[in-house]
Image 1 (cartoon, helix red, strand yellow):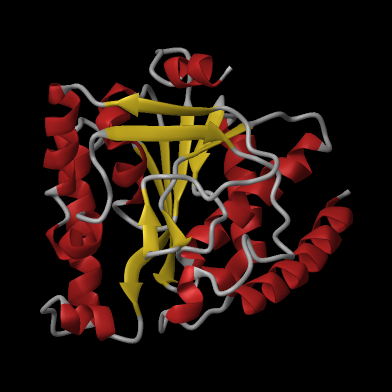
Image 2: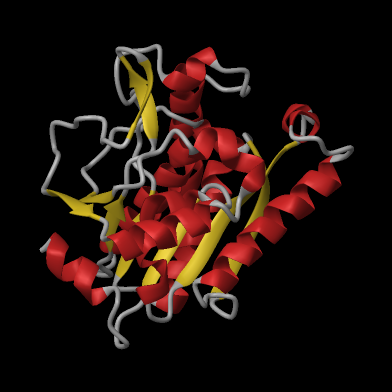
Length: 271
């Protein structure tokens, strides 16, 4: 089934919705095949620029506004390179590292986009404790899809691995194992695909340090398992427990519970 969905994403009659936390996440996930997507909808939840200015200053920018513009320009360069400069795009504009505080409105926005565009599949992050914005993105997509399934609308979630906490620190290029894990497809890149992905990653010079941590010889996908967002993705600490990003796994789960209550009340009110 996964092979068929991946092939379907590149046909003219299919549409894929890409929902990612930061500008460049879509390139990490499926940069080698972005140019083959037909009529995709590209959704970014955050602007990629934390408000605390630490990232801005560390990357040589004098202000948050400058860093935010740089992130947007880098993404625009990548999209132009693969012919997606005119693709449909939605920017929610949440500051980097703050998506976890907007779980319910993000879920509402993703649900609205699913109903409007009705994609065949949704590409997004797994829930793996790597970055809180990644986990928040996974939450919003899963909860939106689940709520629409209850009214007869079906959407398949396909995810790509990013990073999680492993025995030697940050682990990239593989999924955090899950008990409900379905088929995984590891797709080796041809020399041409490898060059294309490297060219795309080079469009994000401000993110060079983190992007060089991701393998570029293959792209990996799986149909998303069912997650319990009320529990950490693995026994803490998760990766972001150890980073100054203003979030912990326990706090994230508390926010997920609060968002579920708020969203459930909002959906009930609509009916």
